[in-house]
Length: 538
Image 1 (cartoon, rainbow, N blue to C red):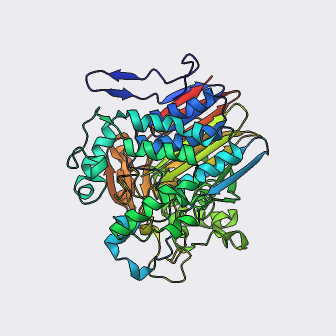
Image 2 (cartoon, one colour):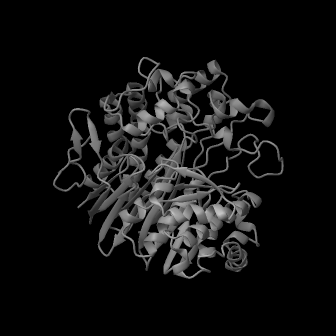
Image 3 (tube, rainbow, N blue to C red):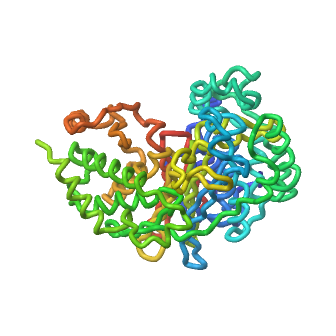
């Protein structure tokens, strides 16, 4: 890792408990030169080295994305997929990077039963993360791939202390992990979780990173790494072969979907992501006065619940192929007129008596990145090649298997349906906010609630820390019960919702990472629900 002037770096003096080797991440940071917020403080520090070396927000995002695959391995890595929203200050252009993975050529609905779609080598699609990160670095960054990989190589080779969250997730998935190749890497002696504070070293992953740094990303798709993946898949019954990898899943640049809400212009991720769900939520909420949208009141919580459920019902009922969607004339979910109709229906109902990962970066030049990447479920497919050290994704579980007319029906080279919604909001000509979250279907509801609070005047950290709720398609409301008024639960119950109380700062309810621009200063806020950290460069 390059030497840094630590007087210029914030959040690098994290407090460590020597007895347990624990780190208390910096959740809030302020700086003028650059800001990065990720779901692991060491990935934030890795990104800060790019700023210290003269890099921009894109360089920082790429370095952080690689590093998250090291220190947050249950959520993302080289074997997954990456989606981004970028504002390029030089071109004054905001665009989406669709980094969808692809189904293998041998994949058909009849080729896999239920369990094979979820775990093991057969659950894996063609990883896009290496191609996506190399693509944006070459076109919009200023550092080389080798420079962007340097912090991750050091993290993998030297190790890092296991957090309480990583230990908890490993224990939770222990029985499943023991059945698959992941046990060899992520369990001590292949049988038990690493203790909290134990140094976790990944030598095979470090070697893979070094090879990428020397030979380029093409090695992953047509070189030695590709041949190793092919052999591993053949041994273990996977569908992913060399010919699948050779068709490199380079990303597609797409136009964001957008709306205006409370003085901000919100741009977010198009199909196959879930940005239009977020846009519909904001359009519906705009039909209600601000006092009725207060998420800390029973009426406000009920309104949010209704809006979340309706937007997700509409998305399920109106799936679109991402290449067809721009040609559709009647895009109802983006229509303000449709939102007015839905708002009338919602008003009648709320009358009352009383693991994916995300990072956000900005720099002084005005560039902004919101990046969401994943290996789908926690620990992905739980399959890997011990020679390479990274987990394969399990995106084969994200296809439609019954309705042949569905745009995400499993067929060779198809893309899976995604729930991501990396978002950039503007006030004036420069980006004001870069924001996003993991959490599958909870992503857009988490972003919406934080955005609502920010535009209502709450500080960045207060908006991120505030209690959250989510409503499923079936009407089950998950909420941080002990942090919310007790009459919220009574109101939801009276309106027919099933209550699902969750722990305070619940892992389940997303993990929002955001950067806000306030005049010439950048404020980063990391969600305390996971191991996030904010790091600024002066």
